[in-house]
Amino acid sequence: MGRMSIQGIQPKLSAVLNTRKQSFEIVDIYGRFIIKPQHEIHSQLPENEDLTMRMATQVGIETPLHGMIWCKDGSLSYFIRRFDRVGRNGKLAVEDFAQLAGLSRETKYDFTVEKMIRIIEEHCTFPVPEKYKFFRLLLFCFLTGNEDMHLKNFSLITRDNRVEFSPAYDLLNSTLALGGAEDEMALMLAGKRKGFRRRDLVDYLGRERLGLTDVAIENVLTTFRQAQSKWEHLIGISFLSSAAQQTYRKILKERFERFYQ
View 1 (cartoon, rainbow, N blue to C red):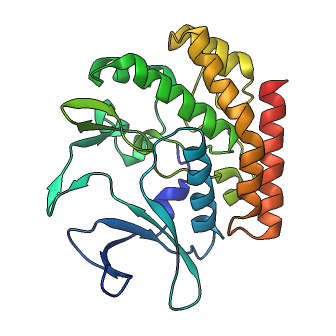
View 2 (cartoon, rainbow, N blue to C red):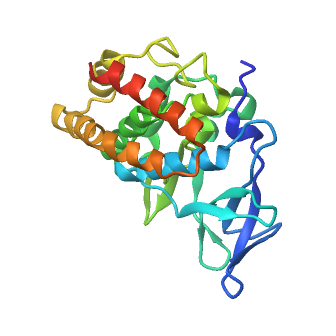
View 3 (cartoon, rainbow, N blue to C red):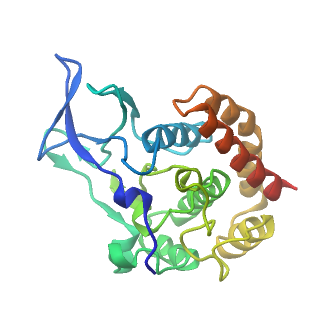
């Protein structure tokens, strides 16, 4: 498709935490953290991701430990702890949806949300609660302007002999980062990637395709509705510039008005 992935072009460094010096050290192997410095073209990606991940946490989406650090050159970088590492050198089994679908980085956009549901049903130990998480995450990405959630940004993890969605990662307002976006979703849903309304995301995806109950759906909708003011507060105290904060609020307001009208 030739789409540009924001996360794909963002520099990433592997690091460990030196608790004695209270600083990160860049390593080639056995890294426990990923550090994302500033990008030379797309500004404020670390600030954007830190804010969006915090917004996700507020609505019950599981996220790893993450935050911002000042670098020696005075710039801000984003860090996140790897959730696939345990013990000294142990690893948890994690597969992203591109791997599960037999696709590559080059074809990670060539899929549909409907096909992802079949992967959940086939691989998850208990598909119903994972469908709920999937619905909540997709709706979150729509509301926060994330049109770059391709297959490699969704993963399943095996923990305690249970296959389930991994903690969320790579969440950011890509519409803000790109200065606008042609599409609203990286993967096709109901035969389209933009122009989504409540009927597409709730009636079609939530009820018809995922088979969620009215109670489950209303729980998600209520949670997001109540979170809007909290998100506004988080935007205001974020590391984003005043102009970027204003644009983030504008995108959020437009999505909420379109979805909840």
